[in-house]
Image (cartoon, rainbow, N blue to C red; front, top):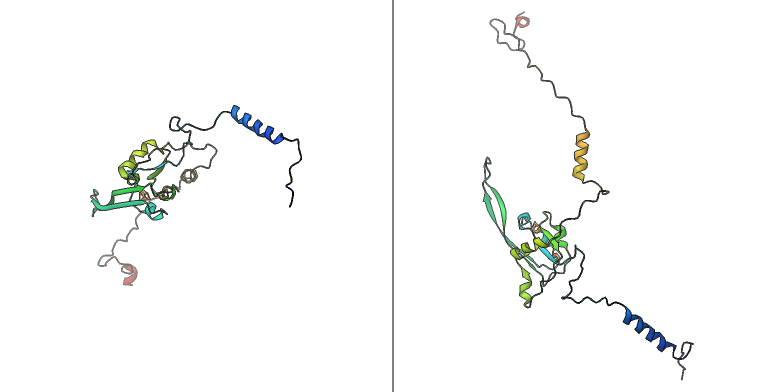
Length: 208
Ligand code: SF4
Ligand code: SF4
């Protein structure tokens, strides 16, 4: 039978160490937050819920196709819009349905990243738990209401790179304007010889 190896030390020192940890912890301030009595201090860009800015949505379907959980449901129809001066009316997509099922969503943010028209945003609101899982399907009106809770975009970094549009505009302004082209005088047609047609070769020289 093998003997258990005990760490060398004064007998009872382990007990004293344990009590010291207990005393230290007892005198420390607790870090537990008493939610919901105390609201948590979340970063302003927390991923709480997705908000929809309906007027920016062109029904391109990119978000729905890229969503790994297939939890975005979009329906639309086409509408003709008369354009003054245009020969034919223009067609545009009208959004009928835009639902996100938050019981399936995994908050990856891909839909927000891929939207080319800035129609989807993160809101830090997270208190939308429901007793019935079916109520976690938010329709476009509900998603639109979350827009009021989306924080404003951060201020531009003064040391950051300028936007490429600004750089292009500055470059364009630096190019000196080309001198205006002088109007060229219209070619003078020779007077037709008496009895001639005025065509080249039809004149005095041709009659010789
Ligand atoms: S956050 Fe991710 S899972 Fe949720 S709707 Fe967007 S793409 Fe789908
Ligand atoms: S990607 Fe953006 S614009 Fe396209 S359907 Fe989705 S929300 Fe609308």
